[in-house]
Image (cartoon, rainbow over all chains, first blue to last red; front, side, top):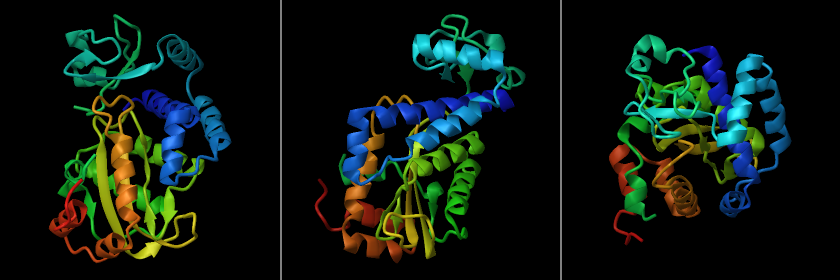
Length: 117
Length: 158
């Protein structure tokens, strides 16, 4: 996979984890199971480090889309962007294009194929 | 979630009765590599990084020799449940400091329509509180026996 896209996916996973840790309902459920959620600062440090390895323009675009739409990187299922449910252009589906950073023409989110093929 | 619903999340492809790994990161890597080889996940490095970050938030080793590595990742298309056992046990940084022998891994996509991730995790944590169940899992010989343990064998399902 495109290395920068992989870093964006990892960054979004980290952002999801940080957000859920700060969500009282989610955190309470995990705490009731016995899980401690004490290392949020470690997560923030890991996020900072990871963000530093992403190209600035791409990171800026990720942050901007995240602020506007919640999730910046979204999976594609059955050639549909799961961010806005628009059908993606046929040209996007070639194996060559799947290794590139592509944006949904409708919502602007960054697209990702979770199954690879 | 009842035990039958819980069991449907597991599969024989994601069952390791005897892990080779000898430490925490090795266990996570062996399980993720196994899932990648089974075609369940696409980008192993993303998943592995997520699981390690989750451990830095607080150990998922809840004591009594059991750990529940878990988290959400875009690199998985649907909820994955995975059981593995280490016969000798590994140092995992569990909250009671004891080596961990039983591993239940749950990885969910960020958006999950059926919302089964936390209910499944909670159900397994609850099951594992029973010392008899833990002992049975320590002795599990194959997937069929694992199935019987999760389903409660002769016990009445919820």
